[in-house]
Amino acid sequence: MADLVRDYLAKRRALGFALRTQGPQLLQFARYADRRGHRGPLTLQLAVRWARLPKRTSASWWAHRLKILRPFIQYRAAFDPRTEIPPRGYLGPGYRRTTPHIYSATEVATLIRAAQGLRPPGGLRALTYATLLGLLACTGLRISEALRLRQADVDWPQGVISIRRSKFKQSRLVPLHPSALQALKHYARIRDQHVKAEHFFVSPRGQPLPYATVQDTFRRLVQSAVGNVGPRQRLPRLHEIRHTFATRQLLRQSDARACPDSAALLVSVYLGHRRITDTYWYFSGTPELFAQVGRTFERFAHNAPP
Image (cartoon, rainbow, N blue to C red; front, side, top):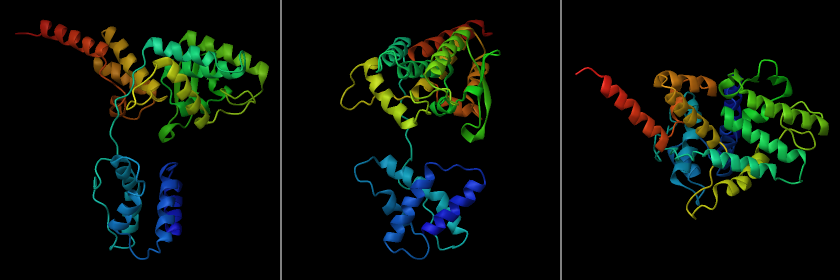
């Protein structure tokens, strides 16, 4: 089974699919099947047993694991018609949208101040995280895009950063507000006094920031920004800064009385989405946004012909 999975992954990656998450999961399944001595066509029983291996987890995670298996099983069915393809949703939905936390302006400012207090005092680490969080908040970049950013990707005269081969291998230009550009220039000047590096955001040793390290640091910072949460509540996530940007920008465009469709399309292009339906995922019904929707409908109703 391990050989079959490796062959499948090689063919998919040759077509341009990264499979960074699915690849390791499929290899785990292959090792499980080989340990059990499985031979012959893939069966629904085998797939479900593997999907439900983690005991202390949610049913949606079991469904997600089975969903990852399904394309591989479909591929194998072309070689062996006895293969049993799991029906869609066999273990339920593979993902449930969790209501994102929309950060207030005060929470964002508190996050940045907390980053400025990182140890060692006055070191590059504090300025790096404060500038990184500020850039995420004012552009809605994916964290992966910000961490891959290189010095050559910043066009200082034009005030634009280049995002190269991001999700779905798409590239785009992201214009910056002059205040954001000024903050990046300040960071770049201090950074160059400490280290020489190719990446824009770096550690005190000049190395690119690892994603896991950034996530761990953010979890500690966010506790000081949003305060204590209940035992059944989760801490706000780093990616929800992108949700916040999308929702706030839609509200901002609506305040300017822009056409809602045009406003949503503008946000979608800026975020680098291929389809506007992808952007709808990031919009959240905040009280401010619902109030603006109500005012817009009142204007429409008032001007509508009898």
